[in-house]
Length: 260
Image: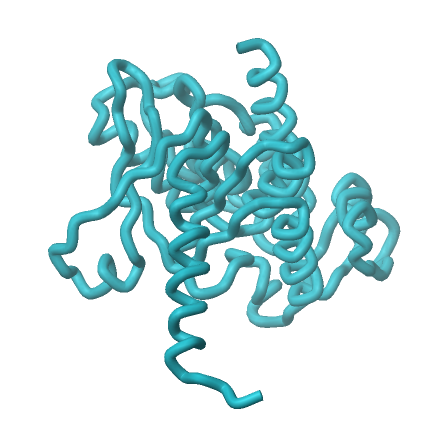
């Protein structure tokens, strides 16, 4: 077979365009491809929902790739190990209750599982605004990340979604956009993004799961964005809470879908 260079280009342009058109109307739009976002995408897609995940960077995985200080190992507790076991990710017992896993294997496995479950993973996209319909958040406004990085004046496009998940980690970007640009009060004690507190792994792991919740009608937070929005501490390179939060946000959205 003789390869035709233009046919290669045509295949890329055509199939990507089809993929992008296919996610402009979706059940759940997740912003942020870290462990919580990927885990949430997997469980939602596995349940048969139409899911798209937008990640700003070239690669998925968020802060999980680098482990701790570029030692590419992560740690999970007993509950987190159960999630890794579900994905077939190998762990070693560092000491009782502390399990280490390869950060690269974990990240790649989560991404692969989400894609195979049916979630559409879109890298190099940034969310610069939300779509408002009446008093509700009806979707996202997206643009290419390189456009954002270069500061170019290029208009974005919109995605309509029944539910939105802020999985953008420490920055809680979608939550900030809703607070500032929509001019509404979030479902936090102050009505605002409360900000992340200093590190305390034990408290942060617990609060990451407790703070996985709806912050505005049909808008949820997961992962580190939970503590950034509700004023909890960060937890460093222990990832059990992040994985459990991703699974939990999927459960909450699925439950709300059943009731609406």
